[in-house]
Image (cartoon, rainbow, N blue to C red; front, side, top):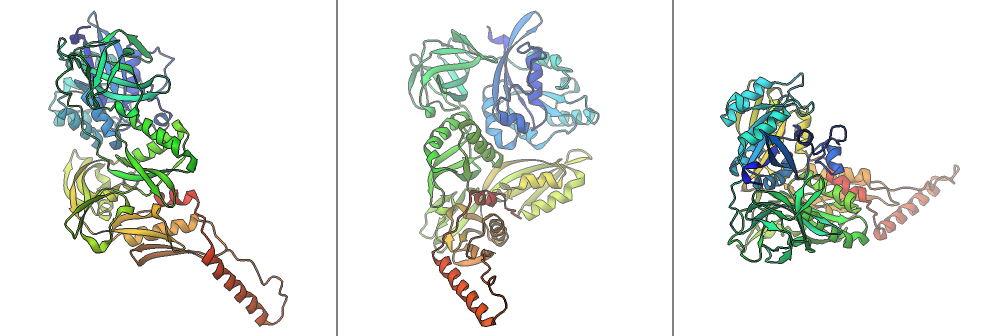
Length: 599
């Protein structure tokens, strides 16, 4: 089909603004699915996505739509909305010419809406603004429309109004996609050049790559080359992305589809890589998109040691499906062999843990999350440390720098005081306040990343009754007074529980963790000391009292010296037991450390 009849577009929006529901209405309007047979959020294929009501993976689907007596191909790439999955959004944007900017008219423009809009503008995408949920009684269509006009400089006529739930305005929006978004502009006679925007592992067919062809064409039987590895493969199957794969003989310029080429190695099909033909190949790869920059680091270990081999294989397959996951092998005295992984945020960490359990049946445990610190040593060298185990001796440290982020918080004016108090507690530096309208305000803060990776998002939602939205991006490294805190159980250091934090917070965090552990670790026959230390200095302590047998039960009256003798004998026994006794630390204790309050 000619390029002028193709539209490659995505939907960008804040979490829970209805983009997956709108995608369902598009599928109905283009007869990809019939009414009555649909599953809510059809493109959200993971159980996790349906349970949490969020999109985690970007999904692609091809639709045919008749407009003015001509059939058009619409390739929709559904994108996530949560701040932790902005890398998925960047991949989708690199494959499109246009984007529908979807805004919930009852909630207005939120932080992630703005973030994704800037990503789209950076990619030179044409923006089609649309208001969703116009059927809700509390929808503020006029106010939200004015916000969009102020931000985009568009006219009122250019803003589409839809209800993804009822289907109102959906066909008019599809017409606008054809009228306002540009077609691809590739060179059909140029050497083949296609971008891998997603990939996953199929047990029977190997690696399946999803591509967008920018120039030239790819045919079944073609020898293709991957730019990053220079490996060559033969295309066994090629086709379109319907609800099920639709095999074809070739993909033409401007089209999106899938390729199966007997790629066995998971690491070979890198998302963002360029595919070209082995003969008459294109001179240079497509710009692709940014490499993911992990914000949060955590160790992942199998609960059962024998699952390690399965974990190695599972994490490699997961990496193929989730290109923003970064990992390297690690071992721990307490937890055995595992991986040190880099994540884009705490939700990303939680989702990866859940996917390993559900998709690969591997129960895992994660160590206390950390961020990357730059540490200058007295000998002039500089280290990058994201694992507390690698933290150097404080006597050798010249300076430490921690990462700061630019945070944008959009909140109703009623809750400004609560948000300011929370940001102040987390060492935030307020930059400015912008009033969007008389009801909502944008607060700009510079915050240390270590302060927001644990429970900042949850606390933000709590103090604003769910109305605040957060977006953040890395700013720079700044000098800081951070320390490494070790947790000792019965005098033994547990490396998996060590953490790095600001020295002002060390006592509170340490006390919170020792108190939490005291509630979780079962009592033993001897007293157990739980300590938080900085070097040799103990900064917090909790005690688990011993289980005691009632040695006086057989004494009915009698001389007090007899009772004292029995108690002294018991005391000696406990002392000896403590010297040789080991503390059994249950798996729940490691999970409890993650949930300890970090005020």
